[in-house]
Amino acid sequence: MKKLSNSPIFMLIGNGSANQFRYINDLRATIKKIMKHVPKGSAFLYFGDAANKKKPDVGYAFELLKEYRPDIHIYMIQIKEAKAWGVPKFVTGVYWHKDYTKNCKWGGLLNGQPCSNTKKWVTISQKLGINKVFILGGGKITLDEYKLIKRENIDYEYFPIERRFLTNGKKVIDSFTVREKIGLTYKKIK
Figure 1 (cartoon, rainbow, N blue to C red):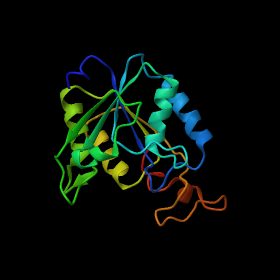
Figure 2 (cartoon, rainbow, N blue to C red):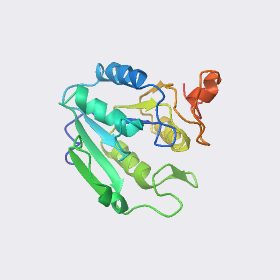
Figure 3 (cartoon, rainbow, N blue to C red):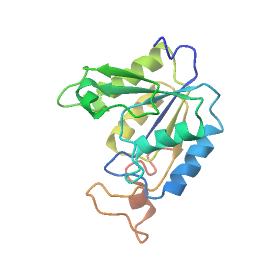
Figure 4 (cartoon, helix red, strand yellow):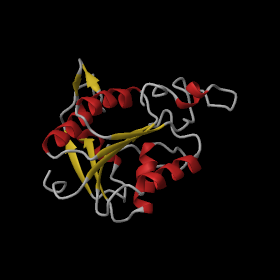
């Protein structure tokens, strides 16, 4: 909290490792668009998704954020169990926690209440405020978090970026509908 208290705070959520982003150029263009609205020295909350250009998901989006804007600070919130996975070079600092259960390990809602990583950002929002959340597609946890973003009256912007894979692992192809290409967030986030 102390490290975040003097910076505008932002979040970036969206497609995880199962879905990924279909086109890296679309992701790059979106990140560049986002960066135009982020003040110098801002902080972003990051939840430990792997940053891998070959499997581009929201973790890779954070790597791009730092590449385009070295002045921003990225603070990772992650479960202590994942400590062995290491910390990406673009991360400014890490908050490891044990506040999760078997039924809610990574975040989202459990019985209507925020849990794990989600619970941590909600606490930050309530104590310090979050300026804006950028939503890049996403799955179930993203939809859960969207409900909380609305409940907490946090400003947000949604980017319906195409995913690379369907929930069942099948690769997205051009003949699919827009709904299939975008995924669970399509027309559920405005």
